[in-house]
Image 1: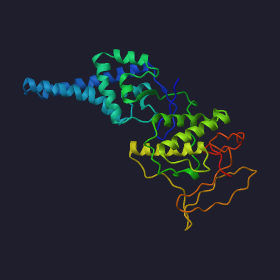
Image 2: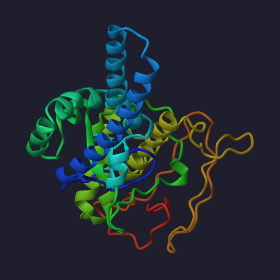
Image 3: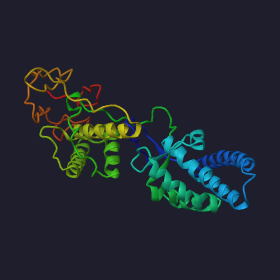
Image 4: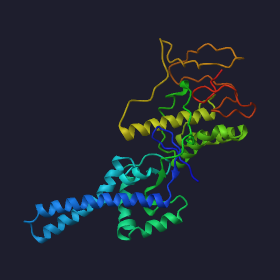
Length: 322
């Protein structure tokens, strides 16, 4: 069973939808579309009674295309993958990496849906869904999308911990366009399950994923930043940008606090371990402020190879630097 996490700045654990629920959602969508098509057609017949036969035929074709083809595309674009039938069945269309779909995804799905669903009465779509491991029809394959279940049992959702405050906004200048969707999905799934992994395995996985992300962005991992914290901070930056593009909101991500003429000051983490004295808050230069490296093995819920699991778990899910 495949599990996904969406990219809308909200962590959700989603599962691919089964063929029966997808078929019911399609039937509800078709019923709504046909009802609208009949009502619009009746209105146009009365309004175009004075036109000649060729004009009436052109209006009928345009009505069919706009209502039965353009309508579902517009609805999926505006609702980010939630049509009337999918909303009733608890389904949603997402990208392969779990993010929200856009117009191009809905367009490809809608155009191929004319062949898969309307022209073949759903036979092609059913066969493709049965053959696919994740239940995808041809429109999903070519559009790079997946229909998933949004309604999951309470308490089974994964949690992606946010990065520590001293890393928030640290990677706002990175170019994330070269990072593939599959790598983002792997990072999300790792952060969701990192507490369930063996410490040695989790640390090595975090290092490998951080190396892959750093190689795609062209910027190395900052010295002293544990790989799991780096992944959480970069993922939060990507989610922030995704939310801004999708919903057109807000300004730039929050940056570290700054005070006085000494430049940015990294806020000290709260609640240091009982056996470690709190360090004095360092004042760093304004250009490329170095980060104070946390203690060895204090990664995002995944201790290093030489340490055990820390007994203290802050609100972010990470152990703060000493």
